[in-house]
Image 1 (cartoon, rainbow, N blue to C red):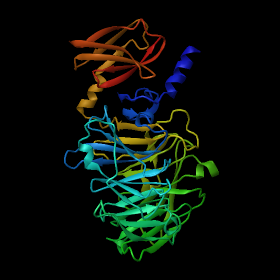
Image 2: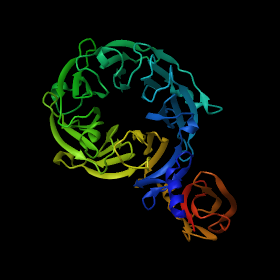
Image 3: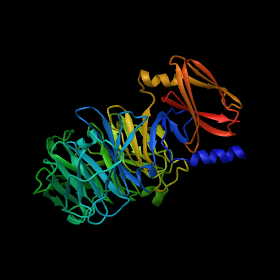
Image 4: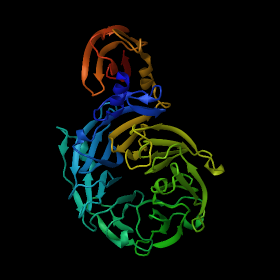
Amino acid sequence: MKNKILLSIALSVTLFTFAQTPCENGYALNYPCDGYDLQSHISLAEMGASDGNDSWGWTDPNTGTEYALVGLNNGTAFIDLSDPINPVYLGKLPTHTSPSIWRDIKVYQNHAFVVSEAGGHGMQVFDLTRLRDVPNPPETFTEDAHYSGFGGSHNIVINEETGFAFSVGDDTFGGGAHFINIQDPLNPVAAGGYAAGGYTHDAQVIIYDGPDSDYTGKEIFFGSNADHVEIVDVTDKNNPIQITAFTYSGTGYTHQSWLTEDRNYMLLGDEGDEFDFGFNTRTIVINVSDLDNIVLHMEYEGETSSVDHNGYVIGDKYYLANYSSGLRVVDISDIENGIMTASNYFDTYPSNNNANYAGSWNVFPFFESGNIVISGENGFTLVRDNSSLGNSDADIENFNLYPNPAKNKLKVNSKNEPLKQIEVFNVLGQRILNLNFSSSLSENIDISTLNTGMYLVKINNLTTKRLIVK
């Protein structure tokens, strides 16, 4: 009974920062996982917030440093990922007006553009190069510019090829797309809008490079419009033209979509169907190879009943923020033949996989390093595919603990790297032991003072392994 209570405590703890924990036997710390290691975690409390939402990323073109941009109920957090196992919370850009659980961020020309459903919020513009030198983090930042052409907005989309932003779900153009010229990032200029399709919840906008030659080189807007898909030619901002509108059966809430890289298919997430119809996580795949005549290609049903939120395609992988099931990765290499296969996952909400709005809101899988940001109710979590580790990461497996479970004595072995420091933490993140060594490959640790339960053993500030004390 005591062990069950301790396990329950371990599964509920998410409020401390910890670094580099391999996914072993289906878990990384208390997080269920398959194929993804935990790099690090920063809680909402550490960022001075009570709720989390969207995320995006920026890579400094001068230094190559990666930064996570994380939406919070009361602002936008900036996190330096120079050392992904020891990320630095640099500070926060506070909300322009009031707090809101809805905040969205995108990046263009080294600037972050932030919108929120908070009343009167408009669009904040923040110069990301300021993050290169933050002497005393965490800092409270100020915006560098502000656009007041709308009040509250649900989402922002940016086409980096053209330098246009598209606010969607705001209080203009019937909630449809509000066009903004951001080619001069600190001087956004209103550029019209599109109201004919009604409210837009999210969108992807590209310079079209797909198989339909009728639209090659055109700027095309792929909107998720609550009850249908709306595809619009927005090349001429003064004269946007609807190409097609598409509906599908079992519509709950047409939430967000992303195109495959060959532009043949759109992967669409419906945020309401799991509630309304009892589906497991459902992805609607639409053949958009002929933009004037798009058709349903297939439907993919996931492994759990969790609600899908934001999903993105890179190559043959679909990276989905799946609320209570966390990050879910789906193999789409055979999508043409109607086959999608569940691949790996990292679940930042261990409590359940039910249909609810708890858990992961967004994932950002676009960093060249392979690090993936997961954001939402669990704050900031950074993970990495353990099948693509470099040599330095592979050294993690050179450490082992014996025996495990252990009672009074623990032996820590290293195959290659000398042991310099061993730290032991309880599940609350409190350091219980801190031992330093002169460089040996094997050390015996006295753990007779530790109570029964689960502990975390951090070795050389490189990796963390779970230890059960019996």
